[in-house]
Image (spheres, rainbow over the protein chains, first blue to last red):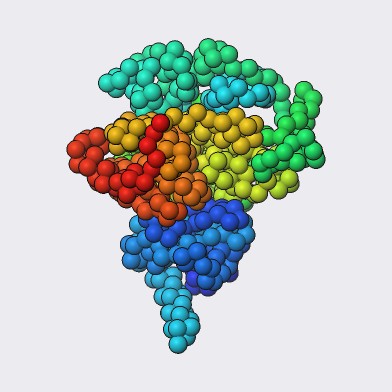
Length: 140
Length: 490
C-alpha cells in the first residue's frame, strides 16, 4: 500500500530519519508500505513467522509477552526489527492500543535498506543501545 | 455482483445499487489499452465447470452451481489468455443475466447517515441503521457494503501536476507520434502507457522517487506485471526509454510543451523538456462522506481500514467488497499482501463475507459438515494442492477444521487466517498456502491446542503437488496430538 502524502512530513520529525534531506525522506517514504490497525488488533504475533519492520506514524501499541503487557510504543517508535535482524519469530505480541497507522518494510528488505542508508542504521543502533540500557537497568 | 450472488444463495434479502448504466463496472472504461492483466487459461487439465478450474481462471465470478461457473473461457476469442476489456465486460453481463442478479442501475449513492434503530439487535452494528440518500430516494439498512472500487483519479501535490492529463484521460496513441512523453509514476498504469507508446513516442521518461518493483521479482502481484516490462528492456538496450528514480519537484508549462524539474535522493537536479506529461499516479477510493462518519482511511489510495472480515475498523456495520478489500491487510507475512485488489482474490472475499454477514447479522448459520478423522489428512492436502481460495488468497484465507471435543471434527470452511489466529479457543487446525517472496508457495499448518497456536511451514514442492507420502506423514504427525483428543464423528 503506497504511502499518503503527509508521511514525508511525519517522518521528518522522527529521530530515526533525523539526518535525511527532503528528497532522501521522500525516497525512503516510498520504499515503505503503509498499514492501519484497529484498536485491539494484533500486528505481530509471538511465535508466528513472517514479521516486518514497523514504524509508528500515529497511535500507540503495546508490547505483550505471554499475555502480559510490558510497555507502550508511540509515534516515531519502531518494532519488529529484532526478529527481522535475527531471522527469528517475534518474541512478543504487538497490539494496537488505539487505531494505529504504521510504515512497514518486509524483513527481507531491511538489510538492504539499512546498508543503503548508513545514517538510519546508526540511528537504529542508537535506539537498540537505549533499549539494552533500559533493559539492563530494569533487570538490575 | 459476487456478494449479491452469494447473499442470494444464503437467502439474505438485500438491494444492490449502482451508478453505472449496466453490469461491467470499471471494465466499461479501463484498462486504457483494452486488455486485462489477469488471465483465463483455457487448457488446465480440469473441466471448466469444476471448482479446481478457478485456480486457472482468474476472471470469472464464482457460482455454486456448475452451469454458471467459468463464464469467461467460453467468451474469449482464443487469441490471448488475457481477456480483452470488452470480453471482461461481457463476462460480467453474462454472469448477471444467467444468475438473475438484480441491480438497480443508474442509482447514485449521494450521502450516508446513521440513525438509532431499536429494532436491530446483536452484532457490533446493533442499535443503529444506516440511511443512504440516493438519486432514487432513501435506502435504510442495518448493514451496508460499499463496493465502489478504487477508481477516482489521484494526483500527488506536485506544483503544476494538476494541469496535466491523468492516466484516465489518455489520448489516442497516434496523437503521441514522435513526441517526448514524461510519465509520472512507475507502477502498472505508468508502464502500461509506456508499453503502448513504444511504437509511437520519440522518447519516454518514467519517473518516481523509488525504484519500480517487478512482479516476477516479488513473486506477487506487487510490482509491474511481466506484460509491461518491455520499456525496461528498451531502457537497458536502446535508450528510447529513460527510467528515473527521482522526486518530481515541479511541472512547468513551456510553450506547447513542458519542463519537468526533478531532484534525486543524492541532490542532483535535472530538468527534462518534453511535449507531454501524463500523471500515472494512481487512484483513490471514492468514499464520499464516509470519513466524516468516522471511517478511517490510510495510504495513498485512501483505502478504508478494515477488519479481517472487511468491516470498517472504526465504524461497525459498514463493510466493503471488491477491490477496496485490499485495505484489509491480513498478516502480510514476509511483506506479501493479499490478492484482494484483483478479481481473482476479492471474489472469494465476497463469498466469505456473505457467509459472515448471514451468520453474524441475520442469524443464518452456515452448514458445517463433519469429516471423518481418517479422511482429514488427504482432505487438507487436497485443499492446499488444488483449493482455489487458498491459491488465490495466499496467506489471507485458510481452510479451517474444528477439532472440538464436544462437537467432533467439523469443516468450518474458508476463513480469514488472521481471524483464526486471533479469535477462538477450541482445538482446531487451519491450512493455508503461503509465499515468502523468494520461491514456490508452500503449505503452512496452524494447530491450535488448548488455546495455543503452533505454526508449521511445510516444504515447497517443485511440481506444486502436496499430496505425496511425505506430506501425508508430516501432516499426520502434526495433527496427532489434537486428533487424539477430538470426539469421534457421529
